[in-house]
Length: 278
Image 1 (cartoon, one colour):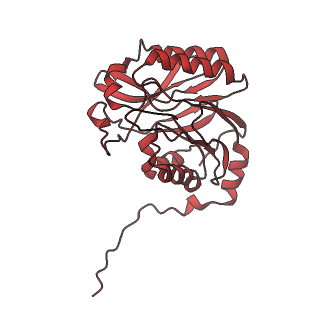
Image 2 (spheres, helix red, strand yellow; image 1 turned 135 degrees about the vertical axis):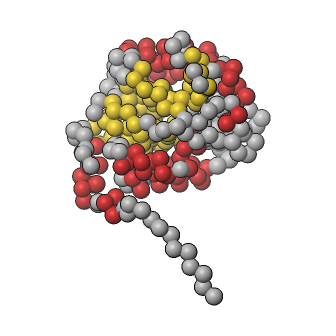
Image 3 (cartoon, rainbow, N blue to C red; image 1 turned 135 degrees about the horizontal axis):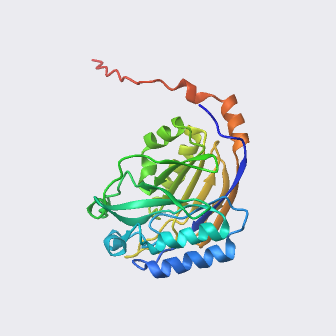
């Protein structure tokens, strides 16, 4: 597996509480946090899932934007150019010719929209019905920014380790999960985000919204940057809004992978033998 040029990169991840169904207000909040906290030496800025409208499936269609005229994407393009920063735009509800998707726009330092990732696994449990409002994406998307391969996932995708292993096999250096994760499910969030880093020997950025949602529900508000060994590099433990930053040492990660080559032991196929013992 070919590795990219060895380097360190600086990540900034924006934790926020989105106002339900109010794109204008949420854009203003992002501008405020970025202008006050984002530093010029940042390589990649990451936003959370549905930051434009909040986690309320009923507001998705109201907030759906056309990719060509999206106020949210245009804002991210301006930030990218003003701060010379690559952006993983969390997720925005975007209209396409074949339907509406929960999509992550990827924008380079020059303000170009270079890719989108459509959420592959939709959360339709515990009274939610995301699949009623948006369509599921068909493929994982790995983007290369400044020579770094980044595997993109959104929220509920974290429960499917297969997508992360596929990214690692394809050469991912960093895995990202941009979420609006509920406060009532702390153990899965804590365990799965760390596990995806450990089992793939890859840096993991787990970013989620904070604060109230609606009907007495809350986002968990515990974003973390996790290294390839499961150690926490940076985190926001509480419900506050702002930027979480961390330096990722890719050379150190490659050296660790060279010493601990466990992924070479993966079998091409695992056939389960079902035995009936009487």
